[in-house]
Structures are given as C-alpha cells and as structure tokens.
Length: 359
Length: 139
Image 1 (cartoon, rainbow over the protein chains, first blue to last red):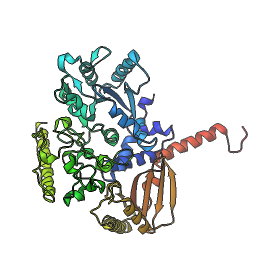
Image 2: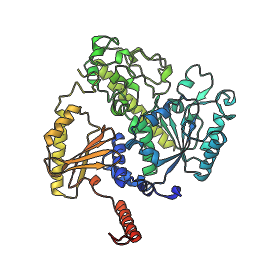
Image 3: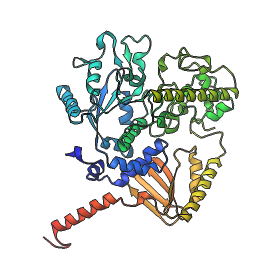
Image 4: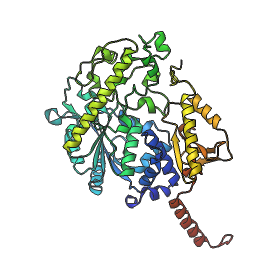
C-alpha cells in the first residue's frame, strides 16, 4: 500500500533521492523567504510525511487557477509537488468521469477521513438555493458542505474562492460568496490571485506537509510568505516612483523608458502578492515589467474598485478598503505611499491581534 | 534604462554585491573558528541584477572542485578561490536557473549522500549479491 509508505521511501523507489528533497526544500524555502537553514528541516519533514490526499472542487471558476498550477512549471523540480500529493478528485484533470469520478471523491473522503485537504477554486452561488451552479444535479453549496465536513483543512485558491472574485462583482446576480463565508470551524487558507501564483499554491502545500501545520497567515488568511509585501514594495520601477518619474500615457517616453505606472492606474501600492519578486512564466516577467500597471487581481473586490486605469490618487469607489492617496506630484507621493503601507500594516496587525484574542 | 530587463535603476551596481562579499567574509571567519559551521546565503531574494551576479561570481573565482549533480534537473556546485566558499546553481531541465546559493561550509550538505539513501543502497547491493552469487559467478 503506497498510502502507508513515507514519501522518502515511496519516491526513492522511483529514483528520487533525499538530495532531491533537499533541493526542492531549498527552492521552496527560498520562495517563502525562510532562512536557508530551514531547508534541511523541510526536506526531512517532507520525506517523513505521507502522501497527502487532495480533493479539488471547482465551482464558479474559469479553470485559470488549474492552468496556473499545472502549466507554468517545466517538467522537473517544481513538478515534484505532484508526487507529494494524491490528487484524488479534480474534474478537469481526472481520467474518471460521471459516477466513477464521484465514487473516487467519496472513496478518498472515507479512506482519508479527517486528513484530506480540500482545495476550492471558484466562488459559490447562494441565491435561489444555489441553483446557478449545479454539478450532476447537486448544488455547489451541497457538494462543498459534504466534502469539507471531514477535511483537515481547506485551501481557497484564486480570487473567486478567496474573496468572491468576478462572479461576486456588482450586481452579483447569483449571490456568489467566497469559501470563507460558508466554511466554519476548519482551518482555511486563502491564496488569491487571478490566477494565483503557482509557487504560492505549491509552497503552501509543501509547507503544510513538511511541518504539519498551517503557514503563518495574515488577517485575510493569506500566507504571509507570499502576501506579506505589496507589489510596489518589490517593484523594480520603484526608484522612478521615488523620484517622481511617471509615465503619463502608454506610449510616451516615460512608458518606453520604464518609468513608474502609478498615474496609469497601477494598483501595486495596495496589492499584496509576490508577482514582483517571483514573477511569472518561470521568472520571465510580470505585468509591470511588460509595461502594464498592476490591476490588483489578488485583492478583495478588485473588479469593483473604480476602474483599472484610474490612478489610486483619484480614489476608488471602495474607499473603506483602499485608503485613497492624496493627489500629489513627485517625491511627495513616496512619503504618502510609505505612510499608507505603515497604516495598512498597522491595521493588519491590529486585526490579527483581535483575532488571536478571540481564539 | 532597463525598462524590460527588471534591473534596479536606482542602485549602484556594486552596492549589493559588496554587501554579499562582506557577509561571506564574516561567515568564512566563523567557519575558520568552527569547522562544523554551515551557512547559506540565498541570492534569489536579493535585488541583484544578472550582471551583478556575474560580477560576484567572477570576483569569488574558481577553486579545485567543480561538481555536476543530476537531481531533478542539473545542479552545479563549484568551490570558489576561497576554500570553504561554494557556489551552488540549481537549474531545471531547460538549464534555467531556479536558484543560486553561496554556501560557506567544509562541504555543502547537498553533496553528502543522505543516511537513508545509504541504508537503502546497502540493502539493495547486499540483496543483489545474494541473488546472483559472487561477482563473475555465471550462475
């Protein structure tokens, strides 16, 4: 039975040595900005873990999250995550279909009771009894409740599952809600992004497996390792921002010379994600490096915040969440943003402390 | 101006590299005092441009050891001109660098065979010999 074998022994039979565990752990600890000395402990933890049963539920979604996880890795080191988990149910990827697929889900839930991880992509429609998204005659609401009942933890991947995303955008005709509004009493991790960064998904699962506990989360249940800093914090164009050098249109000289895209609507200063440091497509680039401002796709209600091309200084319709930065030119903006970041950090800390006290 | 290269226009090219070298010197002194020490500097998280990383690599020079490892993609471990200072470069199958480390230790842990792998190898070799008889035995 492969289920009872430790990952180290299981994978050695396939020619994967403990050196490979150490190399993978070095990679993940580097992604998560953990001290390099943590790699040995993570490699040990992974080798002594059992293969993790994962049930992946897809609701109101576009399959972009799955595309992000499965297609952005070259077939080597990063793909090891798929050897560490047993993906027992995933409508897009599994070979089985129909009743056989549902039987696989139920079998995994039975055999791994209390131990399996449920990954959800997509929001869940709640209006009119949940009839707006139904699989084999059962509403998403129903399938989610049934599947999470015996789960060890739930990971909401993508902005739809984490915060409602596009389906929940105004006027939200289906009553779409994030997973956090439906799942109570279970550890829940949000990995937002449209799509989320594959490193954040894989790194979070690897950390849970290796250390047997959830990673450190922020007030919105996001792993701090990947969502601890804003895009702006790590943006290579930041020096232009500090000097007040802004592109004014997408084809002016500033844009061509790589100046800051703040005035063209970049949401980098209020968007917590790791795109600027980890980048996309194997580290090739990220939106700002390709000349387009950040649209803040990993933040709650990003679609309803007043236009992708409106500068933050113009304010947003969602003023309760995003503190508008006073319109000012040049270097003064840097001070404004730093103050904003401090206020945001303080607010996050305060929320965390409140939450800790409640627990 | 490096619009599409991801370089840091505000930093002097040698700022970060000089800081890394100073850190390496500190850790090497510690290793000299305690041969059991092992420290790793992760270059991935530092705002180094490709050019700066190349400069740093050249500055540290070449030592006696140059090891190529095949561990789910190629890894190269080279000793620098400073004994005890190693450069690790992990790549994927397309030789795209996944991460680079400077390790200050007598030998990087990744070069050592793991005890579990050794135990498995010992069992495997013994079982093979038992099954086939002595080397050269036609039976």
